[in-house]
Amino acid sequence: MKSKMQKALISATSAGLVIACVVPAVIIADSSVKINATNFPDPILRSRVSSYDDDHNGSLSQEEIRDIQYLDFDGESSLSSLKGIEYLSNLKQLECEDTRVLSIDLTHNKKITRLYCEDSAVTEINANGCSELIYVDAEDCCLTSVDFRGCTSLMSLDLDDNNLTSINLLSNSALTYLDVAGNRLTSLNVSQCPKLNTLYADGNSLAAVSLGASTNLYYRDFEYQYDDNGFWFLDATGKTIKNTLYNGYYLTSSGYAMESGWVKIVNDWYYIRNYHYCTGFQQIDDKYYYFDGEGIMKKGWFKNGSSWYYANESTGELASEWTKISGKWYYFGDPYYGMYSGYGYLATNQIISNMDGTQSFVNGSGVMVTGLFNYNGYKYYANANGALVTNSWIKVSGKWYFFDQNGRAIRNQWYATDSGCYYFGDDCTAVTAAWRKIDGTYYYFDATGKMSTGWVKYNNQYYYCDDNGRMIKNAWYEINGKYYYFDGMGIMKTGWLQLNGSWFYLDSTGAMKTGWQTIGGKDYYFDNLGKLKTNAWISAGNGNFYYVNGSGVLVKGAWVEYNGNWYYLNNSGFMVKNCTTPINGTSYTFNGSGVCINP
Image 1 (spheres, rainbow, N blue to C red):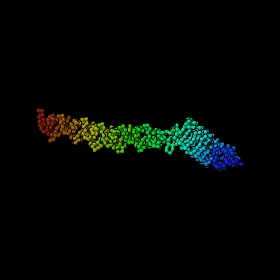
Image 2: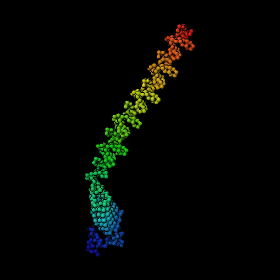
Image 3: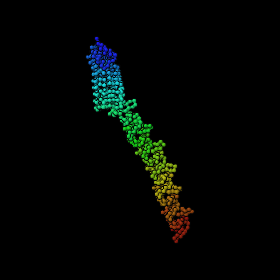
Image 4: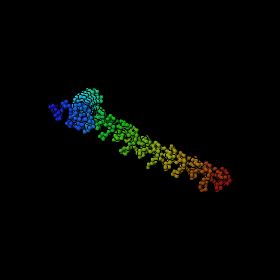
């Protein structure tokens, strides 16, 4: 029969008024603990301790309690209460991962050394005074309160990803590993943990970490902190970093990371977007900029990959389209495309189509070209504004060019206008004041470059080009009813001309002569084809005749033997006939044909 004291203590226990010193009194006062819903409300826990009831009497004796050193409820998701473990005074290891247990009270389990409750629903752990506790894994729970005061042997404490706002570690001098990352701590003091070598505390709201004598700290990760107003970072000494760039973030004077905006540090500009400094091409307020790998806004010329870009020296805004730099014009693609496909860079060695319909050219250095230039085997000309000239004549260094509708100088081809025809040679210049052989035929182009027709005077010689501009050569050519002869060089001949066994005479103008001509004081006769007559009688009309000798010279005052007959030509060159006349003192008679009948 129980004493009054025993009854009183049992009654107090049933009423839920047991404190740290009461339960041991119960255990001491009564050598056994009933296995019932009062002492062990959760059926899973009750069932587990029942397995230690070796004599099956429905109670746990002190000897049976001493046998309960390890309880493993890992994966018992229906477990919701650990009430009753206070009776298990020899419990050394408790595992209740992935359970619905809300509270863990170990204040009566003084021999506990290890606690595993990760991924459970537990909101509070009380291990006050558990001096033999060395290991706790309570990560990914719902903890809002923990008490590890007096846990002087505690070496490893993992409370990662919970809802703790405070923690007291002043009595945990044996602690070597601490993980309180991902909580809501506003302060952390590990100054009394001299053996601490690993600390995880990022993802809290810590303004500072008091490290104190934690000189053995080898690995620390507590730099990232946040609250409802933003996030910030702590340095290696646990102090809030301010007024500087840190890991790509700009930390303001309050320590909070800037969300967005421009920042100038010394002489360099940065732009913060989504808390981090920008790199590469960026569009900001409809303007475009470029930031290097360290977030610094570029100014002036810079190279990205194999392409060149230019940013305004003052504002950093990227040059777009035509931009004048140091007195020279350059063309840049639209920076919008630079953000996505690498365009927006300096154009080089290419023709640019302008908005006004004109075109311009930039050379290998990207500079807009003016004047005459070569590109892809063609010559082009850009005016003073850089616009390519099209369908126009341009005189450069005394030479004429014509640029077609594409701006290309005509080369090795004809060009016809209302005023005449022109030809451009291999150098693209119009042929001027010169002969040019084209497709086997010679043409002459005057000082303006126009193809000549008709008479051409060149190097004091006369030439003639037909209506198609072709040089006449090795041929007779009728011009205004007169015939002229042009030799193999196309030169107009004058004077005597022997051709195909016949002689011709061309006057000083080159015109072929016909009929009687006095040349060099001698008279000659040329037939209708201009051929010189020789050894022949020439009718003078009215039955009169003249005679030209073998040289074609008109015979005067002299005898001529012709076909075995003798004839006499008077001093006028007429043949004497039908008369008897003295010649050199001798009288001769001539018949009607002029034949001397008494030679």
